[in-house]
Structure formats: structure tokens, C-alpha cells
Amino acid sequence: MNVGRLDSLDRRIVQALQEGLPLVPRPYDAVAESIGATPDVVRQRIAAMQVDGRIRRIGAVPNHYRLGWIANGMSVWDVDDARVDELGGRVGALSAVTHCYLRPRRLPQWRYNLFAMVHGRDRGEVANKVADIGRVLGDAARAHDVLFSTRILKKTGVRLGAAPPEGSPAGDAGPATVPIHQPARAGSAQG
Image 1 (cartoon, rainbow, N blue to C red):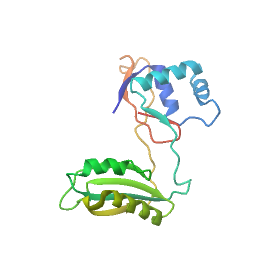
Image 2 (cartoon, helix red, strand yellow):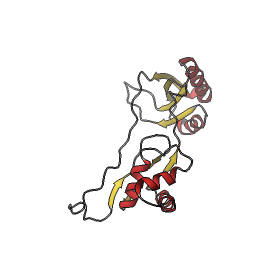
Image 3 (cartoon, one colour):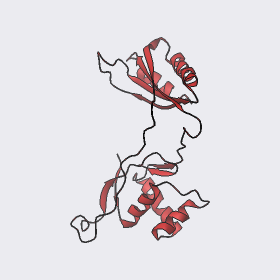
Image 4 (cartoon, one colour):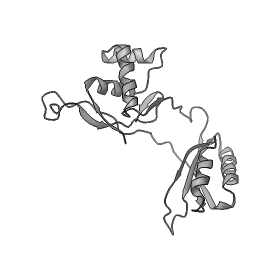
């Protein structure tokens, strides 16, 4: 978690960015206008927050459901512990894998230690991608399963709220120290 100190202007910039960049030719100009700053100042402040880690990245995140990718499968794998780090890296590098991570087993109920998310237009396409993962893992994978999404969950993270009112004890403490976590939205600041 990145924690940074935000003055009033930085806070307004982050609040504007966490809603997603406007879909206009000059989005930072529109953000600047919406918060009463100049475009150059907004760009400079965003760059500074990226350098010091208060904003980790700004990027487009498409809605895969609207693009026709409606089958979502979390493949879970029981991989030999001696080989899981090396093989997990190879699985994570596959273009079909959007998330890949190691998790502790919860024996005897849960034997799986490697998780790899894949998306497809249907379950058959997901199954083909999971088979590709299986070929990478080879005999190091002792078992696997695929957990398909059954509903769409609203993806939101912690949102930066308004600053405390001027004159309140918290408002007099100087710039606020806040965690900045944004949901994965088109053009949102993430940190």
C-alpha cells in the first residue's frame, strides 16, 4: 500500500482521477478545468505523485464483459512446492493469464497453491487456455480445477473522500496522509 501526503490540490486531482479520465481529446485539460487548476499544473502534480508512489499507474481497463469475454475461470493448481516459483513465473507470462499468484494450501480441505485467471468468450475457450497452462506445468501439476464466475461483482476499492472541513482538528493537522487505492476503471489512477 502506498501512502502519501496530499495537499488540497493533490487531493482534488486524485478525486477527479479516481472517477476515470474523461473521454475527450485532452483529458488532463478537462480534469484541470473541473478542479480550477491549469493543465500544466495538473500534469506536473500527477507526475510528481507517480514518482513518489502516491499514484502507481494510470491506465485503461476495458470492461471485458462488454467486449464479449463473458467466461471467467480461475484455474487452481496443486503444483509441486519445489517447482512452483519457477513454473508460476512461466504461467504468469502466458498472454492468456491475467492474474497469477501463489497462495498457501489449506490442507486437508484445499490442496491448491497456484492460481491463474483466464477469460474467454465461452467456457470452451477458457478450457483450452487452462489446457495450455497444464502443458506448461506438466507433471509438476498433480491436480487442478477451474472455478467459473457465476455473477459480476462490482469492482471498487477504497476511495479517497473529501478533506476534513477547515477549522476541524483533523483539518488543522496539515496535509492528510491517506492510502490511495482506486478501482480498476478506464483511465483511473491506481496506487
